[in-house]
Amino acid sequence: MSFPLHRPRRLRVSEKIRGLVRENRLTTAGMIYPMFVCPGTKVRNEVSSMPGVYQQSADQIVEECREVEALGIPGVILFGLPETKDPEGKSSLAADGVVQRAIEGIKKAKLDLLVITDVCLCEYTDHGHCGLLDHDRIVNDATLEILSEQALSHARAGADLVAPSDMMDGRVGAIRAKLDKNKFENVAIMAYSAKYCSGFYGPFREAAQSAPQFGDRRSYQMDPANAREALKEVRMDLEEGADIVMVKPALAYLDVIRCVRDEVDVPVAAYNVSGEYSMVKAAASKGWIDEKRIVMEILTGIQRAGAEIILTYHAKDVARWLK
Ligand SMILES: [Zn+2]
Image 1 (spheres, rainbow, N blue to C red):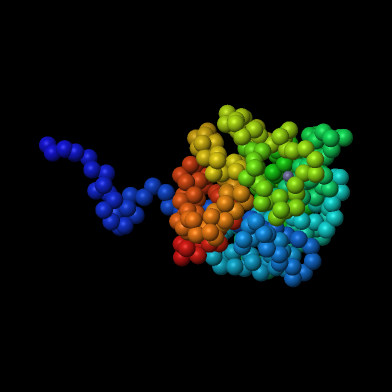
Image 2 (cartoon, rainbow, N blue to C red):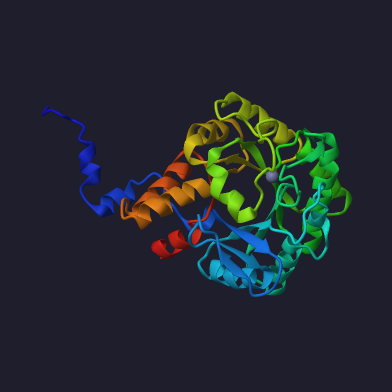
């Protein structure tokens, strides 16, 4: 017998055979495109640290959603930049709030898109924290009621899924109970279950104008050093009724995505966050990397790690590249 018997290179000799044996195929079917809604009409401001991403009024969101639908991306997730902020984030509950109006616009345009909403307080509170304050402490249980009301308000406007990102304990259960009580039992919950306190959110805070005005989010978001704890958070969210669990960020947490995928039997999502996007865009603009190749490699890596759903600002570009 000649040596070597096994020659893995046999399966790499042509694109045809490489395609045949490929283990992961990136498609737009699992992608969600994040969008930022601001007040007004005909507003469209590019986020300086996130080229290609805009803060836009509801009418412009609907226009971009037409493009998203035509590209075959199944859904969008909406973040709100409200007209006014207050200590309790009350503007997040307004029936004519920015997110609510954008949802209604998308639904009225009869676009075949899943509309997911981010449920949190940080974009709506004047202090920029994700929960209510008692002096300088972020209180947990009192925050659950306003979060559930916000989720209900999004459901009333027509949201298909709500995605709580606040990391308060017990919020998934509170939101599920509130939705069910109001006959929105078919609105699903995609929980930001393992959301880490990460430096990769920097550009998002400019986009969503949601930087905390004092302190940081370490008392509610997870410590980047912990992986086992992610499983605990995921299990708790599932016990409380989460339909989909999410790991955020993605790139520095591929091991966590894999752990979660191996542990649970629900769909796993990963958020390819603003900082991950901005680093690629910045390096590409300098000509240091091949943007298309890098983006496809990153997203394939996130999928290979176990995420079936990827929230990514690259979604539209990927859809064009794959056509
Ligand atoms: Zn938040």
